[in-house]
Amino acid sequence: MTDEPKSFTDQERERFRKLLEVANSTTYEGEKEAALAAATRLAKSKGMSLHEAAGMEDPKEKQERIREAREHARRKRRSESEFGKTMRAASGGYRYEKERSAAEKKRYEKAMEEAIRRGLKLDEDERPKSRPPQKRKAGSGAWRSRPDFIRVLLRDTKMSAEEIAATVGVSVHEVFKEKLLMRRAS
Image 1 (cartoon, helix red, strand yellow):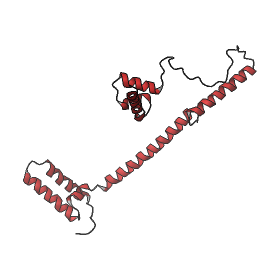
Image 2 (image 1 turned 180 degrees about the vertical axis):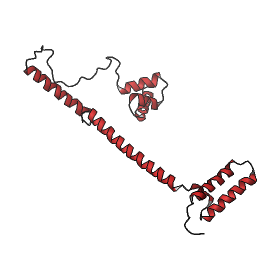
Image 3 (image 1 turned 90 degrees about the vertical axis):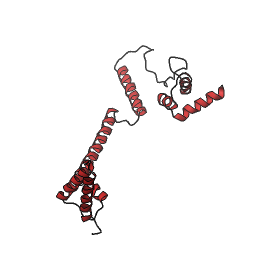
Image 4 (image 1 turned 180 degrees about the horizontal axis):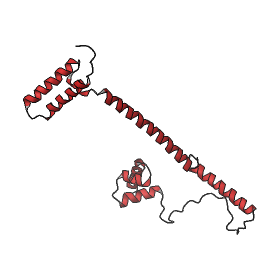
């Protein structure tokens, strides 16, 4: 035996595979033992154990698997690259929503100024005003603060903390914090 295992030829690999299939599929104990013994002798002739030989890959299959993995990785990189380009194009090249919103507001104001300069007449109520966005008042409509919403869900539903956190858009720790505060209050 040599120190380094040799690989099977195509004929030997096919014979080894068939011996293992016979050993696996037969219902006769003697036939199974004979097939395993023959497969073991074949493996030892190449300096390998039965398990090493059974784990060997066909070099052609290995090359094909490597080629497929490389092709998959290349397609994935291209897909991710194209996705990023598409998203940047769709968002107008803006990285954040705030940037896009600010640019849109500037374009609107500039267009209004241009329209007014060309003769657009607006009533006093219609004139664009620069004012900060209005916050919703508590109690107007269905809007609630997050802590209130968490408390309502804890009190009135049988949702788990994870489900509540996902629904409200907070961490599970926030849900447990509100639960503990509710206990303290009662």
